[in-house]
Picture 1: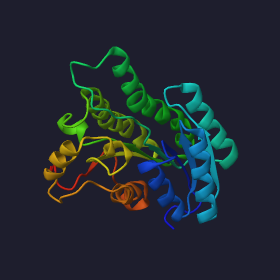
Picture 2: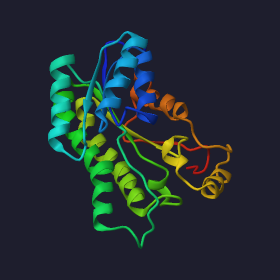
Picture 3: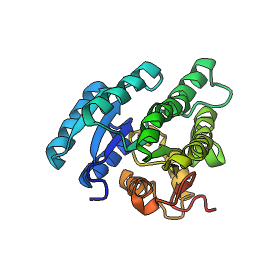
Picture 4: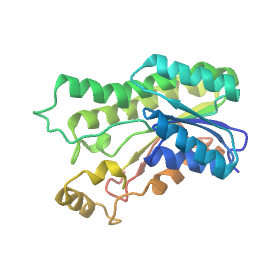
Length: 249
């Protein structure tokens, strides 16, 4: 029960990786906030987690492009659960638009959700965690942000590269207050997102992974919990590769 009596906010957590991280935190005692642009799915996920793990849950319909939505989520969580110990910035979108076909609208939407949203979520919890003199933030980056897009658009890669630098910026700013900020950079995860890829693209990418398969959400959630736990108490500003060996550094 590494997270007993802690409160964790996870964006984009109605399904996929965010849901798995929320479930894993709840299984170890954390009260969790399920936040997603799909409010109905968020409520259902929160209900299921509350029933299974007998912990407090709160759900929000949150569009991370809207600062007012973020502020409402954070303020209401503080009112209802009393504190925020953990923030996981998982909300994001991905597509395979080619570099010549990305429009201004495509670019702005990708950056606003994947990078701008993460920044303003970090900003919103900063005064709370500074007052507590404790807290952990985890940002979900991507292999694409380290090597450029292979099966994804350049705007996605740019947004995830931004997440890696954003992580370092917040880690430096918040370390004096006992707050740690890290990131995870997974390879493609076996979720609905990559199920939309053509079979030849999936097979091409899979062959590049030394461990021979795409990540499952549990493969990423368990390292995520380590970085959020006291076991990583002297780690901050780090981007942890969880990619089956496709990038080794």
